[in-house]
Length: 186
Length: 280
Ligand code: SF4
Image (cartoon, rainbow over all chains, first blue to last red; front, side, top):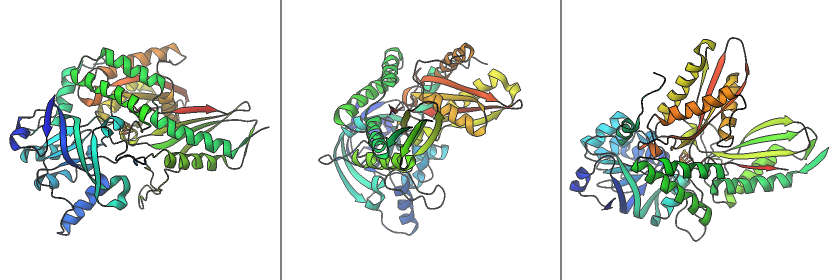
């Protein structure tokens, strides 16, 4: 288990390999479908984004409403593939990492490699567990989007796995190949 | 005629929506425990360990197991000697509305699928399936369904000549196409027979059948076991990080079909295979 504190240095990024398990601490930003659409819309209009993307990490999540007295609800990752259309643009602008679950298309893998960035997997369906890693939460943009608003989170020891590393290796391919027992039906 | 009031229905539906989202069913919990014991992959075992802890935390801290608290699928069996005072559909949706509000559950339903896509803000309407049965009871199953896994379900109209091999190939293809996206380990329901629309429903009912139970025809029961092994040999593993636990269970439901057809449907649910049931 590798402990990582944000922001990540270039060295830390390039030393991580697909399959490494990390505990991440520091500031990250949330955004999923609707927030991505708006971010790209702002860029197309030449407007400023609500936060500086350089060296940052985006977590694909739309949490449940928090109960009174709590800072965050249940908050596991959503399926990343729906953000594939937007990810390369954000990576080109300096984004260094994405946290989500599920397959990325080749254009995203290529962009991760080109920009020396990372794609981390959080465990899908572990929303109550992940909630316990979040120490502060502030909505910083698009409040009208409810669960899809952009939140600035402080996380402590958020358990993640490097799925796509800066060389473009993909754990979803490598892990599966290792445990494939061959199709018994030929 | 037995009378059941709207109020009674609203109350049980509300409670089931909240509880289903916080309490993993016993059969699913046991299946995850068993998988944890058997998994060889380190990453896979680690993942299953976190899922176990997640389920306990959700239960203890009254937090939804997963942030996608789903669209509510309600399966209703109405005894033909039951009369509901008021609107059954209205009562179910009112129960959903109250449950999602009072339980701090995420509202994930949009009013129009293509053009407006505006959040209805109360997670209604539910997707309600009615069966009329004999007797004077009303049974309601509430199964909130997340769409990470729902998006991975598929239906295919096979030819009768495709036979058992055709069914196996299709099931494996669906699971492979899904890969890590539906949050493995998954629970699989396979429907075979009926018609284009009926087979999807069969697969959903198979998915909701208790883990460890088998089809009453032993040929299908054997196929359930064989397919589960084949799925787990794919190597996808917990969270898709590689391992031998890709699915916790695979159930089949069947129905007679036309001489010219063999519809097959595969429903996939994530490990958060939520459902609650009540009989009034
Ligand atoms: S597929 Fe299931 S576990 Fe995964 S995010 Fe959706 S509801 Fe949660």
